[in-house]
Image (cartoon, one colour):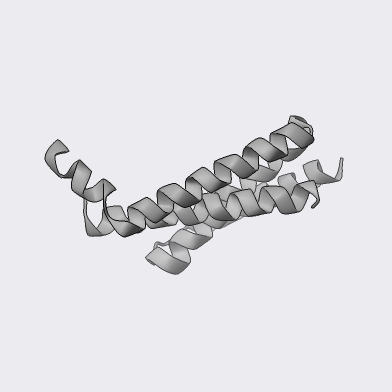
Length: 115
């Protein structure tokens, strides 16, 4: 597997885990410390944690094989996928400036991956 595919797998798992956490917290907001355990035991929260742990293991693998200066900038794609996931799955809105910022992130990650 190439560095790009490994980091992409990491990012997809990371963002999916974060989206599951957000969905869980939208349904069960933290109101007091008493309901935190109930929230942590929700199936979607547990699955998000498992995906986040898998992403971390993949990241460890990437760190052991590739230069940090090459793969770390590729992780910025998590910002892009997270924002797009918020728009698509959570029906959040983004301004023109936010979309422009995401465009610059993608461009920067592309340029860094080519060096």
